[in-house]
Length: 351
Ligand code: NAD
Ligand code: TYD
Image (cartoon, rainbow, N blue to C red; front, side, top):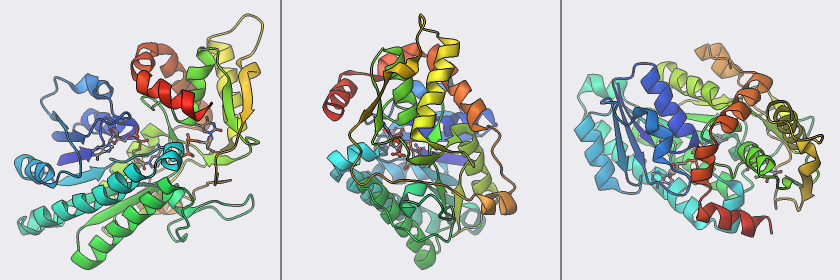
């Protein structure tokens, strides 16, 4: 297998590159535009690994991608490349349309041209995996059935709408052209190397910096959390055993309110980095809600479990503790990514 991982210097992509190489992959080519969210240091462990090639560039650059596919004899494309933060999509949606929709379109077209010219056995083995999100399905009420592969798309944020559009393109490229695509729709991930704009690393970072821990609205919104390594194991399983043209819902059976998540992080920090006589929970601050804030996401991953034999290894409690410890041990990484641009965003957004 020779895998092209796009967006492989971001949070999930870099965990996936590590997952592939640690599992003995022969060749992994990482293509990443290195936006504010991409960080080559996330792949530092594989800098001298001859099986890994890092290329700085965009999925919008069709000439570059076509050359990489041919030069490296790529057998599998895994597309993580995206603008991924809901709050940023509300303030500036254009880059989401460009990267998530146009980028996916161009990648599909390059993949199709390459795949069409492969010899028959290589054509049969080729796979394109689109890494998508449960946010395409919209929001659930407290007693609604969880999302699964048959749930209709009802995206509410510009981010979710751009990912939904991309998923539709992927489906059409399979139905119309026969490109062997797979799509995964996963719930909220957490774990090492997540940029501290997302809830869990943001709260850890702000808690340790002595700042307010911003909880949007009443904090009763529910997310279904999955440790990133469990997501990576699911993606490998989907590539190996998934049926072309199918979609797979991925989730950890771990629904939690945001307030519960923030309190759990505070309790772990109280244990592992105690303050003098007070809890980090004293820093919790309720702030203005996100516009169009989805109330609840939850995934029924039954198809992935039944058909492909996957189930998560981490519970939310074990995964969250590992994650808090990772951030405590990697203060340098956090300091490096919280550059000027990040500080400007945080100052503007939480003003
Ligand atoms: P991230 O923002 O951490 O990483 C995205 C990466 O894509 C960055 O390294 C960035 O530099 C790169 N990138 C952006 N534009 C690019 C372009 N034009 N060409 C090449 N690279 C580009 O995001 P993440 O959290 O790792 O998410 C990865 C994928 O998984 C996204 O597609 C996202 O929609 C999906 N997803 C994320 C979650 C989650 O909870 N984080 C859950 C389900 C699905
Ligand atoms: P986030 O990590 O941005 O992921 P997503 O919006 O893709 O689910 O947010 C997770 C939840 O946490 C979401 O309901 C919004 C909420 N949230 C806060 O309450 N405060 C914050 O500062 C952030 C970033 C998110």
